[in-house]
Length: 282
Length: 326
View 1 (cartoon, rainbow over the protein chains, first blue to last red):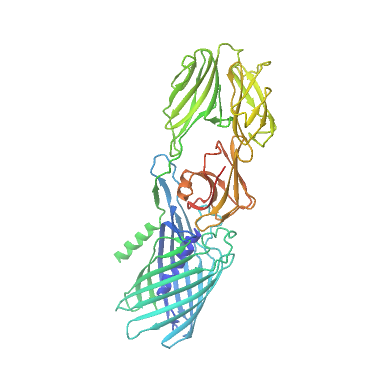
View 2: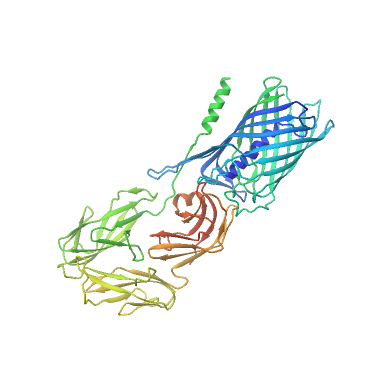
């Protein structure tokens, strides 16, 4: 369902960005590329009032994606998030009582909604670095307009998000902090969003744990009654802590595992989102 | 490398479509008679139906009639019923293996029960082919509704038939109202709605009782209404009216009805508002889309369900509900 997909999508972005540069743009000719698999499966949902209620049956969302950052100049970085295989599932529902007809499961496989972004370093080579990012959310996924199972791999709307990141490294101590704020302009009757987040990263030789908190706040200025099949993906809100554990296999290659969950939310699945990936630093 | 392979396999399995198991929500079991042979059936309002909980049967002495039944248990699963039969006057008929045998002329009530569900048959046994075997009361051809406005009149017709379902002319009928303060019926079968409420009307000729018609009178009786309230942070506004008509429950949404739109938004009748329970034990009236305001439910009676629920059926999420009140 759209809500789950978008929420998972957001979670996934959050986890991916945890490994990204924060306020630091990529140096010219340098880059960070990651191939990831994320998944969430849940039988509960934060409803529109923020209460956790049961889903009948469970829904899941799985994305195999490519995330890349590349420095065109020392200040200008291109970013892409490309979920080239997105899969939304609905479990089969069986009843314990013999003879009660079961409800078949279903799945939708497609390309997912894709993000293209440009990050520009506003303040670089200072104790606190600041960058601005303009992100375009391309509705390349399937918004489920003809899917009777309410399965979706995209929200069907083209959004534009302006984001500002600030970061500080405590070098030679081996940790850093970042924070960001963003405004997400959504189209087709979806409510706009304000986002905030922060992260702390440590470098313990080859082991790099990152703790992150992301929040999304809806402005509730959309048209929930009109948006075709967008009732779930509209007015999404959450406060989400995430933990990402990276391990450098070599100087350039590493693996990561992540988990994000929501402490409070509206219109997203009430279960953790997990991800694993392998990354390459140029 | 081996660890990565295992992780990939685990992820692949995780993305398969899984299976959820849960308990079905119990509901009222249902035992219905299937019309066939000389057995006719009606719903609880007396409207003839292909199947119903009330049967009317006329046999000649020595004749037999096998009764076909349909039984759904408390989880809605169709089963072969184990029926307990009771007969008011065992001298009139006997029952063996769902087969009724007419013994002597007379009338009697036959009761059936199975798994907490019940049905009944009104049996008339005649001694010769010219005697009255059944009396049929019908509404005028212009209407199929048994809901009347206050002071409204409606002319009923009664027909006497022999055992071969042939009309017997020249018979006189007595008319009866269960509650003449609510529905009065004249000696000619003219029904007058006198006060708000519900009352049953039937006729008799030579001791043979007709089918029963149940009339609902006024704005209150026979009609239940509710105002929708949103649930779960989703949007549902408007009101709903339900009424029995022609053996169906008609569910009418108000012209200002609006609900959160998702593929798979359905209207349900239910006795709970919990999405999972509605999906499991409620009655699915069909998919809703903007501009669709009327749904109907054959064989459902006015007080059978407590709520009209707007449900996202695929996920079992309640968008809103209206509690039905008299």
